[in-house]
Image 1 (cartoon, helix red, strand yellow):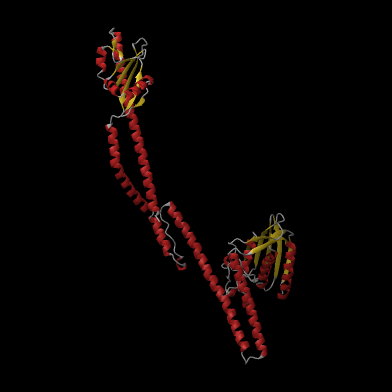
Image 2 (cartoon, rainbow, N blue to C red; image 1 turned 90 degrees about the horizontal axis):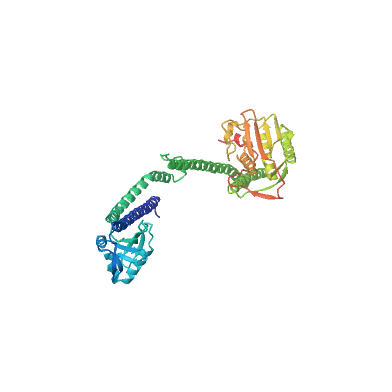
Length: 509
């Protein structure tokens, strides 16, 4: 496959050849037209000279014509014929009746070829007398013909026709053609070589970028960046590639962290399950201990199933294969369900749960996923609030509705706050509640996915030791959609598992 450098050089060579060809054609045509104009002026000069000689004879009272002659009838007088014989071109003089008074020697030579003589005579009679040139083609030559009439109507002659050969070689035109033929190949070869060198020099920054990109062959080299060289186009390309490398580096880092966290989450329950199974299979273990071991193994199996389900949901969402079954959902009844569940859980934990404001609006949503979103936020607030209260609010603003959960719990540090919606992210254990309340670190990630999948957002305001406020904002439905409409998630949406935990506050180091 040819390179861009070769393609540019070929295109330049073709453009150069075309340009030189057009230039040569224009020069040749202009020079040829100039030559024709020179021949026309030469013929007009001869015709005017013949008319002046005849007119001078008439003014001097000298006879213009002689008696009839055998070949061409009445002829010009001998002295006039003698003067006109000195003109080398085809000269023809006609009288008022259209009879031929004089023909020059080149025309008399055509008597041997009557056909050519007839063509010449017909052209001479029909040639315009405006001074314009008329082209006459004989068998072996091309003539340029002009015709003039005397200004005095009383003149003996009515028309003087002069034809000159157009086949006379033009030395200047021949020299031009020979010069172009000799110089053009040299100029073409030199220009192509120069164009190839210039194209190579122009593509040197691209070659350097290619080498730099080839050096970044795996995820371990994604920290490298391409040099931003001079030249607007190359600089834009380098900046764009650097931005892509930055995104790839972030993606690879997130993938490595995700893999490590998933492996860590699976390693612990697997070790517990193995120990419990081994204890249950031991002959020396009493019956109650075997039941306890099996119960613990079942508990760990359930946790692993939840984690695997979360990972499967996450993978489907990343591929855009997770469907949301949307319908018109009244917010108030759903909020009451969540509030009742929160009240029961809060009572068991010794916390007061209130919901002072409920906006009665309708949203277009997947009811099950929306309930999961609300419960995840509420259970997170319950987990990380040891004393105090939890407040739920449903507030409508123009075309959106906000579901807010405010707690008086331990809060989230400013360092952890930007990362709490990342998958498997959990803050330092020192800022967490007891380890048994820890989850997988996917609760808030799935909350963010659900809110974004419904065209909304989720945000958090928190200070360490002063509680947190999570707010979910959703668009209010305008018109009733078709029943049981299904919309597929776009590939960029993310998914997480509803494990009911505040991911930003219980990371295990």
